[in-house]
Image 1 (cartoon, rainbow, N blue to C red):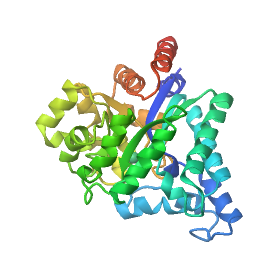
Image 2 (cartoon, helix red, strand yellow):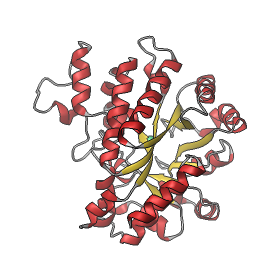
Image 3 (tube, rainbow, N blue to C red):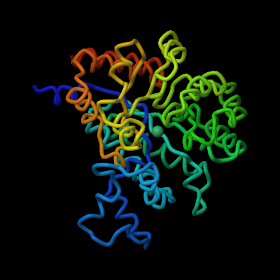
Length: 338
Ligand SMILES: [Zn+2]
């Protein structure tokens, strides 16, 4: 068995995957047509490619523009159900046994859905996919940095309602440069006091200080990306000593120009220096990546050894927000597969 097949067959986790960045292009097209909405370009042969970054992404603006069409077709319960169910089917094909999906629920209330209906449609697809594909999942609700602090409180209160029925954690996402973590202190104080797990996008776009701020002010127990930790030795030391998991997504970081080339990504140095690194896709469609390909990039471009790959897979299991029972089951399945 070659290494690719071996990696594919090992039961894995994925902890950082945005639903709206991971719709099947064929589904976006189908739903745009069903809603009588225009396609982004008229050339039917090229329209599927429009939703992905192909080759060099010109800017963060171009990257973010790829989310406009998916969000337009995630405004009905059946649409949210379909895209979630299909995403879980795709994740299973990567050999993923447990995945944490995330999205910003209020993006999906444009046509009148209540936020509860949005969350319940996604949770219902997760439950059905678990039964059909034997893939476990948890949902992470994202508050958005550019929105008001009271909107972030609304997201946390929404998450509280589903803490025992599928919502695994809350997150803060969006423009990191202009909206520092402390703006949303109140919301994440509530999340922490409620016992919600907290992960925060931080250190993704050059601002290293946001990593420690997210831990100290927003109570993050995991960090989304954290690539710029290397800018501050104290931050690196803290992450190692406290074994704070980093949800790393190298292909996405390449697309958003957070790193100049894949070879420049710090993931290997971080692993070798004792940071608790996990590997994720971020946005499967927009970044045109799946988890097996991302593992193979680590091997082929960054020279990861098999043992380093196994370490990252184990880190994914131990860093997940699932129950201890499920973690033990995942660890057993991992050990059995080697
Ligand atoms: Zn992300």
